[in-house]
Length: 499
Image (tube, rainbow, N blue to C red; front, side, top):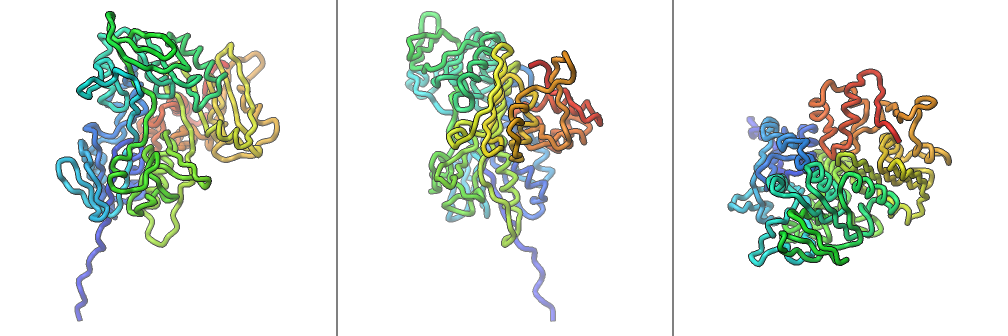
């Protein structure tokens, strides 16, 4: 008797909405797990440009990187792995009952599993005069969120001498420093009491402010821009402290909010972000997942958290790739919280942040601090139960690799060890060089979790970027990576000089 013909099981259809850094990392993880052999993957990106590193936009503004150097993966890479990448594909809506998404041109894309990686959208501060009567932005006003925004701002530089950056967070300082290196007289307006007020203490921010002043960037803290006017000398920005700043450019860098319009329209639960469980699945619909800036995880105490940084988004991508490729019934990893590791990427400004210092101090963490305002360095660890739970380093990052290693491993330290970690290593009497010898298991790239050993195993910077993704996140590890690449088998790297 001849049995029924054998048929292969239907291939699952995975649709990823978004082509930013989180989405790209997810696709890379899926490729590493050979997922395209078992499922059809479609990536819908609403920008026309191939996926790129958004964090390094300030490097394009500064003139140290070409726009094409920011590309994470070229369209040919997607095609070579059997992935359908559609650029300029804006999603109009999601029909969860029919399990399809509709594009603005009417195209329907069906899915079995859907991932929302829509990122965030810039916040428009309440400044009168930013938006004209027809709904368009004043011609002097620039957002700074996309490659198109960056290109528009670069095009305006030749006719500009002065700029005001609204927002003194990581993005605002990167933009301000980039404009300063271009010869633009730049001022920063920050509504908080000090720069990076969510990450740094007041003394550390004071040192950063002095560094900016030394580099020619003026800073106004505890002040808010309230009105943009067209004066006799051109545009001017009025502050609530009575100051008026004449300017040619106003750059908005006052943060963003999760892009949740699609999720809301589909009836998914949304607070600040799209609410997901420990499997990064919507609490409303298990067939829909979210990751990156648009996602909000909820801690046991009911507090919601959105990543806001690249390292937790990439961590989520690795977890979600494992979930999507593991057969039903088998154990999968879960995501239990954001690993906050951030670096300020700006020429002559060095800042590293690990964890949430404010929250950890409130939870009983003890502070170990070392500052030298004369040399422009401020280092602080927050220690609880002998473990480093948060750290902020300004001006001297010579020990950031070792501190990050202890932070990630939750190493239990002795009473004197936190203080010693804040002291730069000395190689000999009278030698002012701070030289760190990095073991193979020391983390070098915090964004991608890459160790020194993995860097040393590569033979070129291109191989490092392609196989480990080091230097493709915040870019803060680029100098160390290059030195490791040159050190070969010596297993030593000069991380920095001076204190």
